[in-house]
Structure formats: structure tokens, C-alpha cells
Image (tube, rainbow, N blue to C red; front, side):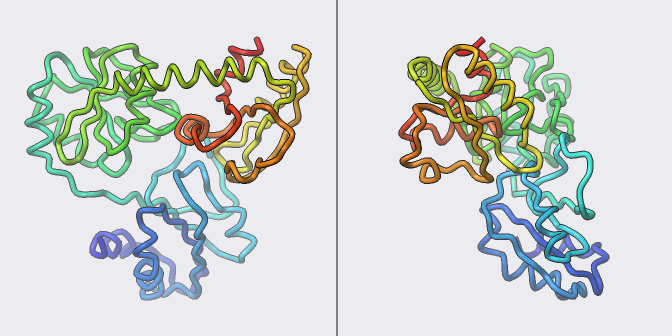
Length: 306
């Protein structure tokens, strides 16, 4: 990984500049090495943000500017389509993880039909090689918010929206596969970097049951907290105001509450029976069991309060 980090920063022109840095959770163990490499490149000062960072939708450009930084270096992700301007220049450095392409190709060959193949940013570089090996068996699409062909995001599985018989997503987690299965309505597999093929249908069934329970509980709520996140790429103030109005029009009390990270401990003891989170849909889905009260996505809220 150190070699990958060195390679990724060797072209940077940061001499005599103050540099702010964001890194994802998986790179925190290399924080000292990253800062050391940037100093070797001539950085006058390096500021490292240690907040959790799960995507380029969470840029710290405002905080970096307030620190006096000349540039923000965002490791682990590429540009997020919803962010068109930043308060200081931002350099995105996606980190590519190792992938056994031969094993991946061997697994894909055994799948019947045309495959809509996509992946997360960490393995994006391999898609071209895989497609060349399998030819017309593979088709690659592009999402709405993702900036690269074949890339899936937690909020955008649109790269699977192509003509195909089955979706295959190369990644470690299940979440992207669940969204792709629900959006396209066709068979979907997760293909782990180790070459294991996982059918997401059982996970989709569990997710659907979980979400139906959340909606039923929310319908009985007397006061709803509609949550806005201040994250740059996830802030939907107008959406939150629209949902709050729909809830109030239905005779239910609704308050708009604001945070950066939406953690269960932040709302412990607050007087709300349910919440609507207007930021990343992974929060109400992946973290649902951590909350004592139901948390809905925007789409679910619009189903409950039409």
C-alpha cells in the first residue's frame, strides 16, 4: 500500500503549499505515511481530517479553507457528480486494491447470459481488462452521480441500468447489490475480490421486510424528525422542507433537525417517534438496527406521506 500511496502523490505540485487531507477508514492505518509522503513532496503544512469519510459526497473543502489550506487532497474516491464547485481546489486520488482478474474472469464465465458488470472505485481500473477477456458477454453502464462507467455508489446503482440478463457487482459488501436488485428487478450477484459469488436475493427479502416494518411504525408516529445533513454532496434542504410539509399536511408534527453525521447517540432522548434522513440512503438502511426509532429514506417517506 505504501508503494501505491507514493505513486499516487508523486505527480502532485504541492511545494510550499498548505495541504488538507481526507482519507477513508481503510487508509487510517497509513495516515503517518501519507502525511510523510506529502511533506517529502514539499508541502509546507499538512492538516489531516480524521472524521469518518465514506465518499466524495463528504468533502471538507469549507473546513480546509478555514484552516488556511491551499488545496484539499481527497484519498480513496473520485469526483462525485453532484458537487460542481468547491471552496478550494480538490485533488481526488482513488486507491486501487489488488484483484485477481483471472479468478474473476473464470467465475464470470460460468454465469449464463449477458452480464451488467460494475464495481466500486477500488476495482474500477480492472473493468476494461475483464471486458476485453469476456467480450460481448459483458456490458458496462454509467450511473447518474458516478463519474466513471461501471462505477456504483451507495446512492447510485445506475451503472446496472443496461440491457442484460444478470447484474454482477465486484465488491466486498452486500448493500450495492441490494439496491441494484431492487432497481433493475433482475438477478443480482455480489462477486467478492476473492472470487466468491453471493446471491443477494435473501438479503433483499430481509431488507424489504425490515423497511416495511419501519414504514408501518412511522405511520403511527406523532412527531417526526426530518434530518438534514450538512455534508456537501448530501445536503437536500429543499427536499427536507417538502417532506416536512407533507407530514404536517397529514396532521403529524414534524421538525427539521440538522447534523453532520447522523448517529443514534445524537438523538438519544429526543422527543421524536421516527426520523426521515434526507442524506445518504445507506444510513437508514445499513445502520437501521442501531437506532431505537424507525428511520426512513426519502423515497419511503414519500410513500408514507403522499
